[in-house]
Length: 361
Image (cartoon, rainbow, N blue to C red; front, top):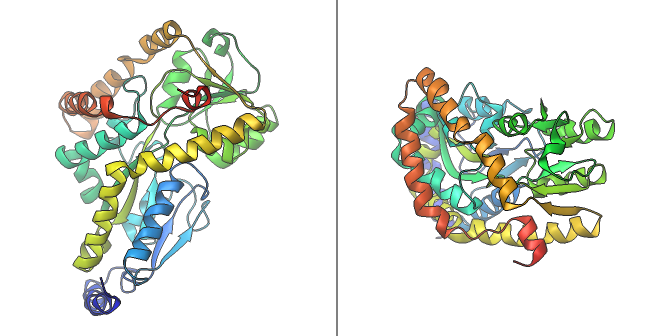
């Protein structure tokens, strides 16, 4: 695609944006703002950086994206409103920080229900495309287009001191995130909600005994293992669906050529690039972690099954009985669609967990 094509289309887009009066959109074809509350080395950031790099490269530089990492433009919890209101055009959204604003999306958050993170990504995509209330929550209520679903791959239980069984969690203060707090409480721990930037000093000062809800990559990137080197795979499945979104007016107003390029990149993410990127990153971070003193552990199949019985189906049923009715949706219908999607995609998932990588399996 030639640069002059984008110049012509871009001029038309700028004119239409001025007429619409949308904030920050007039230069959107050449100056988009990407805004993330985490660092550029955190888990989902590897996918985000690839998407942003490819969008710039494949549009011959006509799309330029200014990147604001680590909450340098908006603080934790402000990003959904920022995209909705046009303060920034693109952002990573972790729904656990927006439980009141995203009640339908919360129906995608659970543990002990599937095994592979790359499969979870496709499950979320299918439900977004086929369950109208989920799509309306993003596109109508929050005026945002989900560019692609992502997630925080795998989140080990991270502890300062080792334990022999999950019974050792009783009474321990564990940082939780979103519905990860359900798992902590079900296993006997005390869940402490805490934003990501606060976790390292809380571990350092003994406020926390451990962390759950930090994906493996981010935990190592944020050096949590310097204080808490004991990592446990508790058989809980992939962690924390997230979404990279764009202001819907910006997305709809982009020239067809640019939107087509974006859509093609997204299809590649779903078509295997997510798995390819994360497999390489997880391998690299497993090597780093083990060389820096991390002990990677797992629980027995029997103990994982016992943990699952404590979490499911209670976690999903609670959402069906309480959150879904308040949101005015049929929770059982959504969860039935999710069951079908899991049956379709989970057997196809291949992205290994860190413990599996460390064992060469």
